[in-house]
Image (cartoon, rainbow, N blue to C red):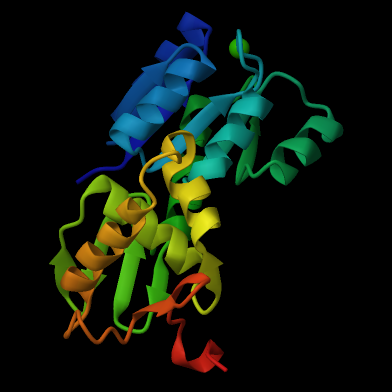
Length: 233
Ligand code: CA
């Protein structure tokens, strides 16, 4: 399928010219006229690349770039009328992949996008961040868990719990910390809820749930997800 490009640009004529140029070169395009809408579309549509104007109403492009980078490694090209070197450097340091200065030739635009897409193309948008612990693979963006080549179905809370333990793999994570980070606002729940979720996770991830090899109880302290062999002491 052709690449999906998210264009965040508030000036209608510029937005239209960009859409026309990109569609003419075979890309699919979705558009937002401000940063908030852009962030919504990013989450909902998972574009392959974001073309992001610097001067936007409400949230500026630089801040949108930072917000995108909190959750996503999607390639970002900054689009701006400011040719100043400072903005270029700042944009790149905030996580943009490339930078195009207005006015630009529309034919040049598609070529620049293709170059950035090529550099990132060995990553699919879902695999960009992958937590891998031996045969266990967690794809946070897609909220998928795989064991060997089998996809494991988890409830949202089971997923949050596993992801949190996996990010701390190899370390004992205290019960209080887990309740605080995974249950957050609802942490005044019955603490046994945590144990119940651990049991459910074991049933899905352990060969023998009553003799866990992966998701260990550290009595009196908390839980530990066994890390990659190479990192385990
Ligand atoms: Ca603008």
